[in-house]
Structure formats: C-alpha cells, structure tokens
Length: 296
Image (cartoon, rainbow, N blue to C red):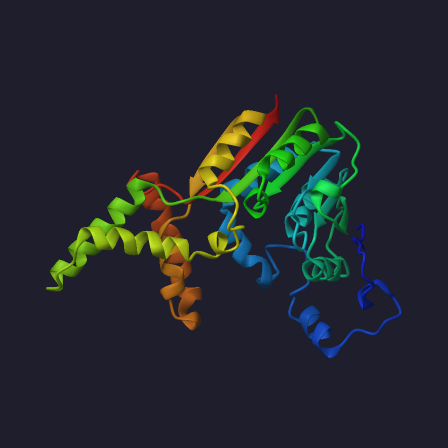
C-alpha cells in the first residue's frame, strides 16, 4: 500500500518518523479512528450518511479507469482513500488550505489495508495557486468547494483547463430546500399541531422550516459571500456537460439536530430510510446535489 505524503508550509511532528506517538494517538489507532476505510472507521461513517450510497458508488465506478485524480478541497482525503481502493493504478492528489485535516489524513496512511491501493498525496495549498499541467487529469473532485469561494468562475475555468478532453468532474454541494419540500413539510407540521389542538399559521411554519434547513452544517460552512447553490450549478453546467445528477437528503437534515445524541445511532438509519422513501415517492425533493459531468 502506498503511503500518503503531506506537503505543508508548516512543519509538524507527524512528518518525522522518529517522533514518538502520543497516548492519544495510540488510542485513535486502537479504536480504528485512523483507518482509511469508510466501512471500518467509525469517524468516517457520517460521511457515508452525508453522501449517500448512490453518489459514492457512481463516483467509484468512474474512478476505476482513471490514472490521475485531483481533489481541489480534500479535507482529510477520505474520499481519495475510497477511490484509491478501486483504482490501484491511479495517482491521487488532494489539496486543502487547512492543515489539521491533512495531518489526520497522514495518520490514516499508517494503518494497513489488505490489497493494493493507488498512491495518495496531500498538499497544503489553495487550488488557485496550484501549478498543474494542462489537460493532465482524468477525474477532478469539486466537493463542497465552490460554496467556499466568493468567485466560482476562476475555479471552474481552472478545473476545465486541468481536465483531459473527455475527463470527468464530480460536483457535490448542499442545496437550498425547494418550494415543494418546504410546502409539504410545513403542511405536515400544521396538520400534526392541529391534531394536538394547537393553532398554527402556515406562513410562519414555512419560515420555520427554511430556518431549520439554514442551520444545517453544510450550509453553515458556506462562504457568506458565495453565490447560491442554484447559481453555482448553473455556472457548472455552463462549463461542463452534465451526464448524471441526483438529489437526496431532506428529513435527515431537518431532524438530526433535534435528536438526543445518545439515541442518534438508533434513529438515524430510520430517518435515512424514511427520507429515501419520501424522496423516491416525489413527496420531497432532496437538499443535496451531486453530478458527474464531462469536459465540453
């Protein structure tokens, strides 16, 4: 298995092999919290719930034939690790400006997995400062990246320049709740309150639903000066040919914060199942969007 190399502007103890690990880090290893495997590492399980199985499966199917993969905002690199398991021939590079998740990503490299994996490298660098060769990448991940920038156009133009002709770009962002979702949920809450003998105003309930979605973690991370997700996706479609897109997650985002922490392990699978049923039936529209697109 290839190891991860973290290139950082700031030295840190994890870069020195002879530096002893702290008891806290040893405990992380014993609990599996550094394993680069979303199936066995409890710290990565929330990512599977956030992304949904379909989006991960489709992304892995595209990555199988890729030789060079770039993640423009990789965090700890967990998504690159998932792709490395299905693309042992690939060189995978992750960029991020935050040092802490990159260090955590390097800790993952010290845990062995069976079988061969692609080579993963992580660098502390802003994507716009990255000096990559034009038309050199088969797959580029644009994962919660556009919502972190004030201007999406330079990012999309650079992705287009780095991508090979016929290459694939993966888009993932948290979207605003649709009018259908807000209307149906507000009506549901109104009926439930009336059954309990509580008067409720539908107009205010709509505002409450939108406010609850606005407190979702993915939307809270957005740059306040960034464009809306709808505008970002329109700009994305202007640069690339969208082959596939999907939307998922509604009720989970709305109710997760209200669940007691110690009971979330029980209620979360139930919420996910109800969420999928509501979206597949057309009663709700998902508030996460993923898309796979090709270079025009």
